[in-house]
Image 1 (cartoon, rainbow, N blue to C red):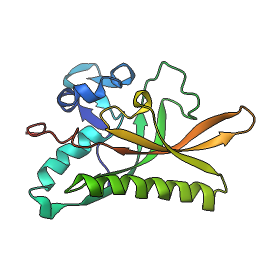
Image 2 (image 1 turned 135 degrees about the horizontal axis):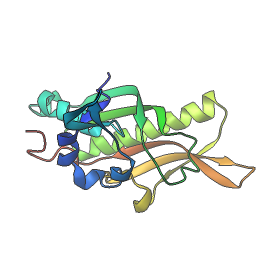
Image 3 (image 1 turned 120 degrees about the horizontal axis):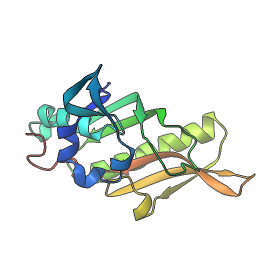
Length: 180
């Protein structure tokens, strides 16, 4: 699947509680040529705001679940802080999967299944050993209940580098009325 790169400001406003951490990093398009745009759009910092608006139209009952989508896309974060230990620039390509489940148990199981798939790619295909873990609350993805991670050790620095994450978003991006 693929969702739009430009996120309407109205979508971001609906989720401002979750996206406060992204606010300083948002790249906003405010002009088209030399004319102001009526509603500025953000260049995708992450895809939840676009994806879950679509989910709200697709899911009418528990029978429509689970939904499991995957996309590769570019994101832009105008980060002013040092991104070490991340290896990235302002624009980067990433893979993201998004799912919706009928119950918490199946959603939590999916988080761990995906984390294990990431670990298998690193260990079995790339021959890079990783450690599976859970991020601290401060490191958790904004709006997520918790974030799991696989991290690789860098012998030269004695530090770890994040290899991949899997988030449990709970119902934080699906509040009733959020996408009406």
